[in-house]
Amino acid sequence: MKSLIELVKSRQSDRAYLDKAVEIEKINRIIEVAHLAPSACNAQPWKLIVVTDAEKRSQIADAATSKMLSMNHFTKQAPVQIVLVEEEANFTSKVGGWAQGKHYPHIDLGILASHICLAASYEGLGSCMIGWCNEKKVAKILDIPKNKKVMLVILLGYSAQELREKKRKKLEDIVSWEKY
Image (cartoon, rainbow, N blue to C red):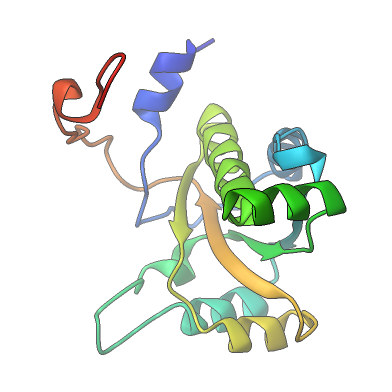
């Protein structure tokens, strides 16, 4: 079993996937981990839509691709997409967010996405968070109500990429103690 630091070091944004289906048991365990993600005031302001249907995945991949910006052309390779939809926060989270000038559902969805990607890595899968997409097209493909917002598409599959060395800023550039 990997330690947490080994798991985090092995997680990367994969942009190439093998032509291999992901076992439903693995998807279910990833969803179980997502279900346990924390959120402000336990609002759980999300809906996850798991997409494995080839035609829908292709349509969503098209909605997440930009020819002009040459973005996300690899999205059709992933055999699983998890679409994260923002739901309304509970009363306490809304009031707290208003008082603090923060929109907690965005923070909560980021935590949720991290849980999904780390769980995928634990299951031996690659993942990639896709923030660039035509939300209206994705919503139409998946029958998402107009008053809901598509936040992310997370790709899952068996990676066809080697593990890359992580490039990070120096710790002293991003961490301080006791003051800025």
